[in-house]
Length: 513
Image (cartoon, rainbow, N blue to C red; front, side, top):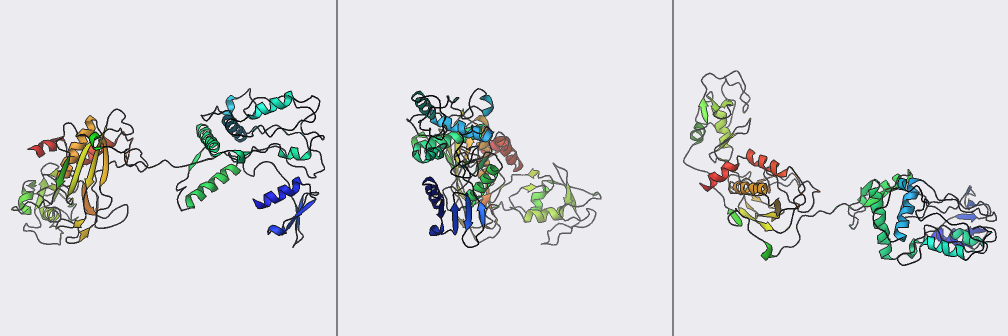
């Protein structure tokens, strides 16, 4: 910036040359020959002064077709008409909108057949001699100041005819100022209006947007990558709009206690769970006897638990059950066949809650329960709507589970476990299907199936509380992570996930009994 100001000042003062050694550059700029000379190597190269930017960025000056002459003594020609490429038309349309106080979407360039490319109307005839050249058709003065078109009309009316702008009678320094954009004269509100107008026009016209994360943070990586992308696209003549990514909205606006209501058709507003000990008094063989039928002549197939032939003894090598290893049984509902020896071993390695799940088709026999640690579940209505459900209020569920010590049913008995991110807030629409999902979630909570202790797939931490295959929506006003609304299929998907855990509408009746 300092180099540019120094060269600009020397050029306007009509110095024949300038030495940049004083500011740290070993160069001499000769304005007579428009050459740059390296004082150390004496290497010369030609330079040229332009009015436009290197890249046609939206927030920069309007691109011009002409450049500065090779010699300052050469008479300058009148300014050429503005460029008619889509980028330049878009830039000038945005600036024209800001000048006239508009910030909404503009018309596409293709619809302006009867307008000048600058978007401010056709220019009047050239002014007469002695007239001061206008700043520029694209100069932005800010709110409440004279528009460029009005300045031009006012100057034309006070100027005799017979001369053109930029004639030899005009001062040479005034020509250099023609076409400059006075962005530095804009106040903060005007710059904000310009940025908003540019973003709206660019997005409405199909310009690709590049979301930039962490603009206010300490990491420069994302803004740098977005900046490089913008430079490359601009260098190729493509417009680009840098935008902020949408915000993550996890929670609703603040709600007072008086606005929180109970859910019609659902009793209470909270529910606690404690450790439920496994049912005792029945051996695994006695439990499985209710679900199995003996097979006297097993087929020539493999047992999918031990991978041995059903006609051969079981290949399980763990603790020895009391049944014989060659006994084969068939599950009564799904009809899959296994070694009874293998089924007993599988039951002993599970929750031992009196239920059995077929390892092939996941059919559940009995009432399946989980290993969820003790905690509390709260549920109530709040007077806000979820995205995609504007016609109903919202059911908010709050799960609270403290850290503790793992029990005998957990992966590492006696070892402590962590509980990250609690209390966890989840949301359902207060519709008929939303209340149905809530009632089934209450059954899943009572059966300890909502959470489990294991290894987090997000952080990789072991011995921590994790979700147990029943998805919840934890974003209230956005859907950036996939755990928010709108999601037209979520309620149906969660009903299917609950059914896979053995929870359906019949389960609510069983819980009442």
